[in-house]
Image (cartoon, rainbow, N blue to C red):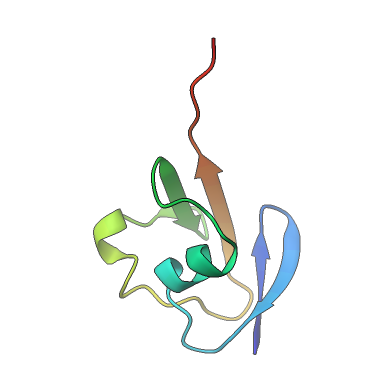
Length: 67
């Protein structure tokens, strides 16, 4: 297990967890989501190949419509 910081919360995830797997684990919709690791935006095309590392800081932003 590794420890990451997501939206100011400390979480543990498995070693070799990709961004896409992590989003599935936290039940995040894949639509309208932006992900940054250590202040670096990760393009959706790299979610399957970008692995989380111990002590990474993850920011997950969900877009939504307002009115």
